[in-house]
Length: 67
Image (tube, rainbow, N blue to C red):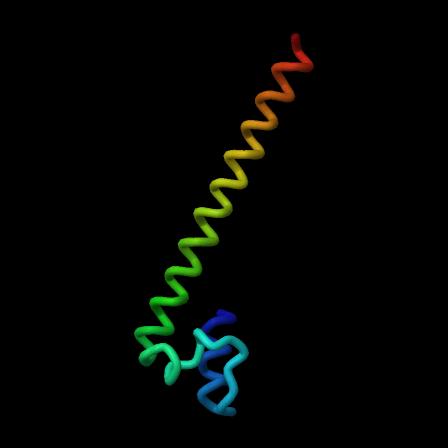
């Protein structure tokens, strides 16, 4: 929702809060969509890595306290 709002508002007022939301700077609206998909994928991968690290620490902590 924020992305759509930012792109629409930027088109109306001529100011984009991030350069990758500016279609003139990234090759049109397809470029904006590509940047957004890549950012979403990076955030999902980062969240999964952080979750895996947290689960690994939790398993290790549980094994130590139960021994």
